[in-house]
Structures are given as C-alpha cells and as structure tokens.
Amino acid sequence: MKFADFIKEASLKNRSRIILALDLSALPGNPLFEELEEKAKEVLNATAPYICAVKINMQLLLPLGLYSGVKRIIDETHSKGLPIIMDCKLSDVGHTNKWAAKHYFNAGFDAMIVNPLVGWSGGLESVFEVAEEYDGRGVILLVYTSHKAAPESYELEVKDPVDGRFKPLFEIFARRALEWNASGVIVGGTYPDKVRYIHSILEGKVPIYSPGIGAQGGVIDECLKAGSSFFIIGRSIYLSSNPGEAARRFRDLSWTINETS
Amino acid sequence: MKFADFIKEASLKNRSRIILALDLSALPGNPLFEELEEKAKEVLNATAPYICAVKINMQLLLPLGLYSGVKRIIDETHSKGLPIIMDCKLSDVGHTNKWAAKHYFNAGFDAMIVNPLVGWSGGLESVFEVAEEYDGRGVILLVYTSHKAAPESYELEVKDPVDGRFKPLFEIFARRALEWNASGVIVGGTYPDKVRYIHSILEGKVPIYSPGIGAQGGVIDECLKAGSSFFIIGRSIYLSSNPGEAARRFRDLSWTINETS
Image (cartoon, rainbow over the protein chains, first blue to last red):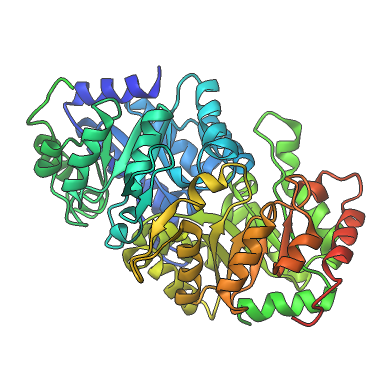
C-alpha cells in the first residue's frame, strides 16, 4: 500500500491524527540505555489504539541501530497496522541521499522526512526515485520547523527565481512540495499562522504534519482549524505517567472536525 | 585535544589536506553488505599515511550502527593518530540535535557537520554546547554543497536582517559560521568561485572543507588557490584499484602551497 493511503487508513481506523514520536533518550552508562528498545515498545503498545503512525528520530536510531533494534520497532509498529516514519531530515547530496533512502525503506520505513534546501537535481531527486521504486513510500518536506529560531531562517525574505517576487523562504519550500509531489510537509504547530498560510499555498493537495504539540507549546485545536492534518507528539506522551491515556486524550482533541479528510 | 588542533597536527604530520570519505555502500543481500566494515578498514589502513582525517556518512552508519561497527572504525582511525568526522548534516530542532551530538561525541567522533539553516536558539545552540562539554569537539557548517542543484537554494537572493541588504543565502550561512565560531565550513569543490568568495568573508578565521573532488568533478589545485584548507574525497579513492596510491596522489596535489597554514 502507498504511504499516503496507509496513513489515511490508519487515521480513519483509530479516529486519530496523532503521530507518536518515540524520542526516548539515554547515553551508554545510564540504566535506561539498555532498556530503550523495551521502553519504546511499551509506549508503542500502550498508545497503538490511539495513534495513526509512529515517528523515529536520531534519539533511537543512534543507540539501537537501523537493522537491529529499530528494525524490530518497525516490525512491531506494522503488526499494529500502523505506518512508521523516519525523521532523518536528510540534507545531503544525491549519492548519500539515495543510499540513506535505500537503507531506511529497505528496513521497512514507510516514509522519510527530508530537507528541501538541498534542491532537486543531484539533491532530493534520488530520494523521490527510490521512494517510487519501493512502491510509493512517502517523502515529507521540512517546510517550517517548530523551534524558537525558526523565523531566523524560514522567514528570510527571498527573491523567487520563478516570478522575481520577494517571499519568505518557507514559501519557496512549500511550492517545492507541490512541484515535487511530496507526501506531506512539516510545519511547526508552534506557528499556527504559518500553518494557515502554508495550507493556502498547498491548496489542500499536500497534508501538513505539525510537530511541537505539547512540550513545545503547540495547541491541537488551533492548528486543526489552521489546516494541520497530523500532529506529532513525543514527550507529552512518552514522559507521561500513563502514555496510553495521554495519547487517547490527544487523539480525542485531534478528531473533532474534518473527520473524513 | 581540541578538534581544530587535532586535524592541524595530523595534516602537518602526514603533509596532507585529504579527508577520506568512507562511503562504501551496499544493501542487505548484497555480499558486500557483510563485508562493509572489513572493506572500510582495508581502505583506512591503506590510506592512513596520506590523509589527515576520516569522514563517515549514512552509507556506513546505517548498516554498521554507531555503537558497533562505526565505533570500531572510530577506534581504528584514532589508533592511526587521525581525527574522524561525522557527516550527519544535522538539521533538526534543539532537543534532537542535542541527543545526536551526545551520541556522536560519546561514540568518539571528533567533529560533526551540521546544517546552519536551523539557526541558533533552540536549533544549533545545543550542538555547540555539547561540543564544548566534550572538550572542544568540532562543529562544521554546511555553507555551499557540491551538487548540481546547489545554486537553486544556496544562491537564493536574501534580505539580510542584520543590514537590510540583499545577498545570497550562502553568505548568511558563512556569516553564521563566523558569529557562532564554527570549526569549519563545507563549500563544494565543484564551485571554486564560491570557495574564493566565502574565503574572503571568513577572513581566514574558519577553514574551508571542500567535498566533490574527483568523482564529482572538483579539482584540488583550483580550490587550493581559492582558499580551501581540506579536501574530502571518497569514490576516487575507495573505488580505485589501489586506494593507497590514489590517496598518495591526491595528498601530493594537496600539499603544494601554504604548507604551514
């Protein structure tokens, strides 16, 4: 199944727009380090009925390894009928991007998050090609991050080479998502006005994934109205004393409008 | 020893400005997959007298794992008296960047390559902090990539919020390297005119690392005159029938002028 259909199906089934970010973190020497995989699976099992996908980042990839612990988490996620996304924010040149995409998709990831700064030719072209070779895996572009310094770069006023007009850098990136037929874009839930603006550029053709909900301050209701389709939540779920209950609460908040989109 | 001193010492000792990019690549199922670590060590051993550092990218990190195969390559590199750089081109928000930096430095990497797009506050600030905690590890900023689409993004004309003047995006990034006191910048050796321009911005305070030499078309002599301090070479060495000899040849080309810088 293509990634776009897979996440939509999981979202409808669980009536949820919540993507669980499994960012549990520990260094060697800390007792948690040896338990990272087990703890991650515990959170996954407790939250699976209330989420529509899982997202993995460097916090787990580096200690667990792609073809060992992470592979087992991928398989566990799939056994719940859920897709899993690698948040590698790839920003390398074509040769490296191609191999990263091959490894992530080969290990079972359904989608990857990449940085559109690198451009198309000799940049992200190879990632989109590999995604197609793997029967329509997803490629999600980072268009506006959730952190404090995001405006420092993403709102730089830039001359668009296409029409010669000045616009913010994130708008160039959002247009690349349309042009390249990306499976989604990341827009920080901490900037709902940006969600609204980017949603209007994307004409409803590319879903918006919003991180930064909870610990970073983003609010689901506001982003939902502004046009976010999915919400990426990590610490507010896995650091909760009851991750299943926390996920269920966020799920309910995420499923109040646009139930069929 | 601080990264900046470590690479300078190794460079002077081996009279080389060549950084070996160990980008050997294979998927599971290919016989090379099981031999990636061994082959990487063979290339390292053959080339060690002619290089000043090693660089690891996703091609080895994903199949070998940070704390297993990559850790052993880090130790082997250090046993040759050489520093080793992780080319992760990190472009995430602070929480993830911090943990990536902790893992890479904890495993023994001497420096990391990061994407300055993410900005300082809640972005790369945490990486520079962790680098200091680990006694002066290096942080190298990606300022102008080596691939064909590089101008598509890096030359976007941008209004500098500091002085209100329009300049190319890469110039904003180069000024961040000065401001943040980065250990180096990446500027593609395929664009020697950009090396020259960025070298003038950096006032000799931040060394330029140039990938794209050899397979991608960059030429050492031209970049050396333009201001590159180090040359990152992968395929033209590790795919050669005699990697040691190939590295020695590139080394000789890299040590013709500015021997003491």
